[in-house]
Image 1: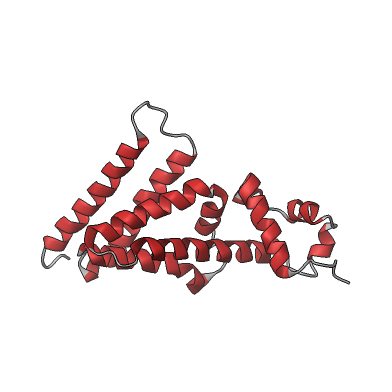
Image 2: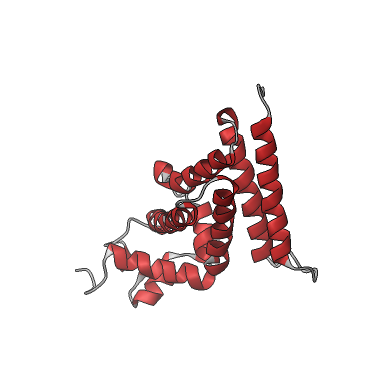
Length: 190
């Protein structure tokens, strides 16, 4: 019989608390069972194992990030949309590094189309900047790689120099926007 109050959603909530405290890489059934006050086998009444639990956590985090990105770009156009998208991505990552890394693990968790929401918001933002339609995939990848790389370096403490990291982030986003706008001005790219 399942422990009173323990449900699949409650197990996912406990897993999120593990991710928040110790990180995505440290999410184990043992850590969740410990928080639930049950033995690991008891969790199998609510989840089909660690891959299923990781998928549930990743899905929740993808949804959170997608919602944050939607709110950031809502009603914005042009470079303003891309700027706010980048800021929202970074803010989510800095506030919840474990959850941000869960989003990055969404593909490995087998979420498929469910993991595409944040990428669709990025695609909308690059469209708003004027990137040519035939280069949208390239533009989305460039934005994602740039912002993600910056965020990962920042989370890892990779910016140890005394210069202001905010200034560097603005420079990154301004450079991305300028490059995408320049690309929008080109015709007939191959």
